[in-house]
Image 1 (cartoon, rainbow, N blue to C red):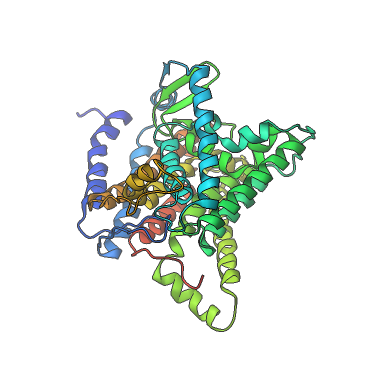
Image 2 (image 1 turned 90 degrees about the horizontal axis):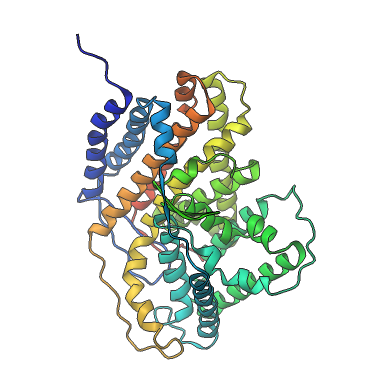
Length: 464
């Protein structure tokens, strides 16, 4: 009589099948991907039968849930989640250099935005923000580790100002960061921030003024720890990264395992911020599709201002994403047959969504970041009078496949994080598995929406 397979053996045997499906998707010769950022930058596009592309992507997430469900050994799960190695701590000189680089980047951004050439592909302000920061630095936050606390020039300037140290209102929580993140993405979409150096510089200076004002009233730690959207965003991305900063220095861990630590998502406001992180990149990609033009066109045609249409779409979309996730948490309570409150389930499972956000950010921005990196390096040699023309890298076609793989990889990681969370939360194995049903359905929906967006030819948002 054959002995039953252990859960770890099931996982090892099933993993190649899931990996093969991911590989097929990633190397399909008709899959599309596009990247956000500078509107005049070229986009790489490939094509695949959309129904097969989306169905296979959703099936990968569903299959990965079944695969994870076979892993029921709590010791094995805990060993994966807690594995790590200590790394040498960075000395004060490294932190000082990082802070100097951040301040220098801010100074060059402002100077180039005010006095540099108007061409966005030759302007250091545009390239520093969209290629250097939102492209390369944000990628490094989840691929390597979050270095923003050491680099952050806004915090450095705000920290030099005196503070009233008033108590930060607990009722506000992370909601100012949610509003700030949505506002930043809305402005990026409806204004030529990506192409107008002067307008971009005004936004940077306005952001600096708000940062200083908030820090003066509430203190640097409270402001940047709760209300600052950029710090919160990069800190969230850093939870996906393999390198983390601890009280003892740096620690190497498996990618995404920072998401399994309970407690850092502390309430509905933090859940709202996590959902906002997932939503904003999806929104940024969706408004560049032909479907959005077809939906918004009739409203704009009858006289509704385009700015209002975009705002309503953002609010409705964020509400839809948040509602879907909260419904998944309520479903988890029913399917797990537990007395754990839906709010607690929403809080515990929310970090898994950040793996999805990281994967889609990479898919959305990798091509532009690679394409314009030579331009950034060239312009930085003479920010106020750069040479013309600047070099631009022709991105190979396989970069689009990397984007597809990143989306699917992020969702697979999210499934594992949710699985580990469930086993940490519920003592009963069947309860732990059933509690993931609703979240998995939400992940499948997010997956198919993300893949549909990157399968569409990208373009600038219409009507604005």
